[in-house]
Image (cartoon, rainbow, N blue to C red):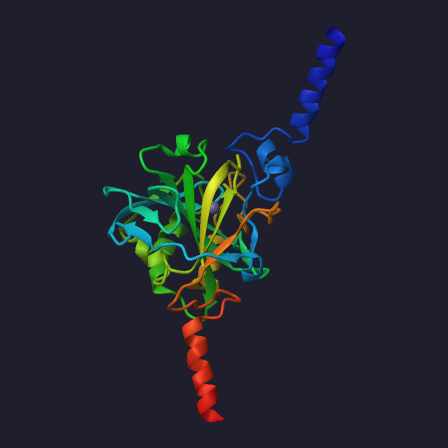
Length: 295
Ligand SMILES: [Zn+2]
């Protein structure tokens, strides 16, 4: 019995030494092999590689979004793994429709540099996540429920010039980049500035949180239209420091196996500026007419 206990203690010590035990707060990017059990063994994990070729077209109803355009105070925080933004003094923006299995409230926004999802194997320089919990449930409870969490993802492409909408946020980021837990206030913040104007086109699939504990049952909506940000603005995100005071040069999780999951794609009838492979039907028709006229 004593021998078995000693052996157990030895195994525990060895596992701790090799970093196999990771609590929800002290995980790191760069050693995903040491993330908690579900991150390794889960069958519906995120992110995944998206492409029109693996997706089934589906004509979801319109997303009905309320309160995303409110201009309000928000707080931004360096949480050691990202920069997160939470709205203050307002009712949380709400969304339903669009094939979502319920009513959801916005919990917070955060960023990944580079993108977590890829589209046609292309990794974008930045991906924004808008994390929602099902209405009437706290986030801590929602992550334990199937369909309890819905995340909207927005991809950002590089623009030659600095994008004005990001400037106030990046100024604040500069003040909190050096210390994990540091919080600063943003005034006149609107979530709408960080969403594509045309939100009709999106990928939809069932996945997980992309950070420990990698809880599954998360409904993903990845918009096909993108926003833009300059290279030098992306560089500012890369200067955020971790708890070890080293720069968080990248914070994206590797692509996870699809394991036979269904991926749906709703095409915007108006435009798909950068869906990477989804040809905008209206634009295609105009181009064909133009080609026809020329010839
Ligand atoms: Zn995220």
